[in-house]
Image (tube, rainbow, N blue to C red; front, side):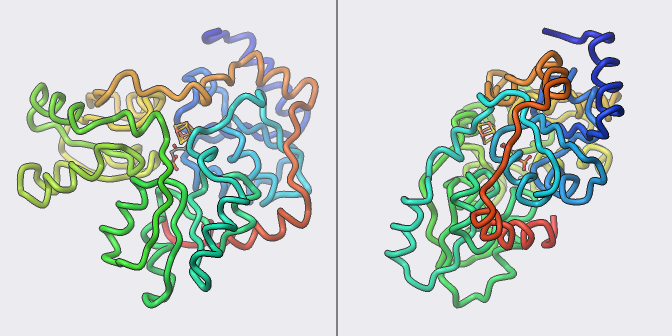
Length: 317
Ligand code: 13P
Ligand code: SF4
């Protein structure tokens, strides 16, 4: 199941032969990240999918990400190596639930986090990712009511950052990030005083860290709420050499590889997304060999979702 140089070489040969690009999320297994052409966060992956010249996109991530790529590049073949790569957060709301919520707030602008299904995006006005959620909200006139979905912790973060009180937040959560609690932060802070915190806004602990910053218990220079790609960039921008990382632990591979002299500690070393780990080298090889599993989105749904996604891709982050 682990690194197999012959298999990795076979994948690179197949990708070349089929004019395929391999995209991998920062949470994927190390050997998947190493075989990919591009590794990044949801926003970066969407941008790569939109601009690639390849005929085939092998998406090593979860289902909604492959759908987003299929919407942005309908003429390309988008493959998800294992259809079991779901997302507990995206599953917290479907199109019918969103339509009912919209009916309760006529005229509200709907902002959907990218971790949503295509049918939910098709019912939304804007998409955003953790990398540009605040910028997206700021692009909407201040007097407009907003329905923000599906993550309540990211919702609380954008409410706090934008200072708007007309944002209604769907009460969804990601089981992995919700499991990174304030206690994990207190414990790791005691073990590594002086370490800098890198915190994903989906985390259950994000609010308490910001409160600690406001109360002066944690200095503003010592804690940052960031998307996964923001976390990758941060270590080279500071003199700090130890970081406590509050997100899915797959990100530690890239953090350590790109910053070999710095130290990275997981806030919760059990924060693992099993959906991100179903993709293995053997499944990526089979995806290329058999052109499986093709992800498509019906044209009318894709057209409605595309406007929202294109706004996300073009705004900030
Ligand atoms: P980003 O990579 O956009 O920060 O998102 C994290 C995540 O949970 C994706 O599933
Ligand atoms: Fe979904 Fe959470 Fe896994 Fe990200 S880490 S893919 S939000 S279940």
